[in-house]
Structures are given as structure tokens and as C-alpha cells.
Image 1 (cartoon, rainbow, N blue to C red):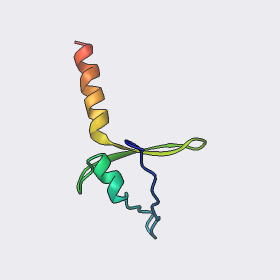
Image 2 (cartoon, rainbow, N blue to C red):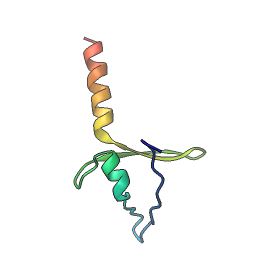
Image 3 (spheres, one colour):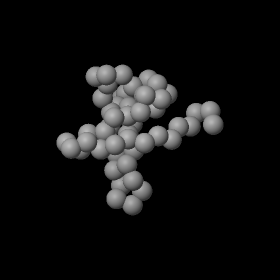
Image 4 (cartoon, rainbow, N blue to C red):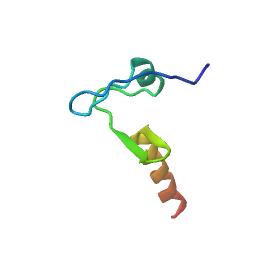
Amino acid sequence: MKGKYVGIAKVGEKGQIVIPKDARKMFNIKSGDTVVVLCDSKKGIAIVKSEIFEDTIDQMMKENK
């Protein structure tokens, strides 16, 4: 399916995971990028590129001027 991806990541000894290459490519995540980890004990974990939040905050600040 276009725009969809399912992959598997193994958790290492230090709790680290590797985001699969196809997922990194889909979201243009590169070495050194920052991501936000969103957690909900019932719904699970989401990893979001931090610039998405930066863009949203910038837009909110412009609307409040």
C-alpha cells in the first residue's frame, strides 16, 4: 500500500531501537535528526519527527499575533 509501512525493530540492551530503513526513507529521517516519542499506556508508542511539532508551534504562534 502506498504511504503505508509495517516493519519490525529489535530493542537492544540499552533500550535502543533502529528505525527500519524504509520507514526512515518514508519520513526523511536522517542521522542526527530529533524525534519525539509519544506514549500512551493503552494505545502504544508513536515516533514523530520533531520538526512536525516545530512547524505546528510556529503556525500557532503566527495565528496568535
